[in-house]
Image (cartoon, rainbow, N blue to C red; front, side):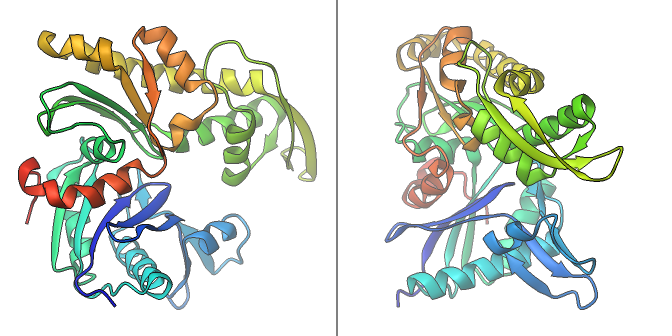
Length: 335
């Protein structure tokens, strides 16, 4: 067993990823905890807990302790981390006793929110905890030359937040963060189906719709999908057919907000770095960037090349793990 493991954690609203330099991604599971309200014990975490959403008896509640990229329920987050790190130890054989941990925080988070993340990891027994800003971690994970004096533009569309940052010389030149991401897209789909069809659907169904027939703005070949939900008038199960054009309309407003954030960040860019952006373009990362047509649509409207990170879902976790050797250089470490 390796002692004093060095690990990077992407504490995401939708998924938690744990990365080690030795073995790569050790764990990628949903940020969900199911607990028993009577005994206050954790029943399941990660995949098992997510499968319980909307299907549990009254005393067992699945919760997502992270909202909008920050900790909403401190105790549950600490419990979830503990259980997931136990899973990692079992699966990989890497001892998680007193690990050195690098963990990312949204660039717009307050010092109180950062302290909560720091303490949640420290309470597990970490030897040292370093915090790194999420856009920098995403840029490192997307293989960008962050420590060179070149403008690297990263757009990280996560579950709870969308972060846009221009990075040069290992630091953030300008950044914007909005608390809008994949979760809000799911919520919009739920609201649309309720208003248009009087049908109630759950979070998991909404996420499936988004992944299968969700499209960014722009022309696309129309697709259809059968969706089951509960009729709000009769209370009985009902199946309806949704088209990708309808979902595209439901997501329009959120995508406009993301576009506005990208534009506002690019407008704040120093003129010396603007030329780099035209040459190198913008890198998309995060689960939300996998929405069909996103890359083409953004490229059309902001008129600079838009590229996809090599592994958009894992960029932040890989970046946190790799940043250990750069932490002193980046000077983002907080003790």
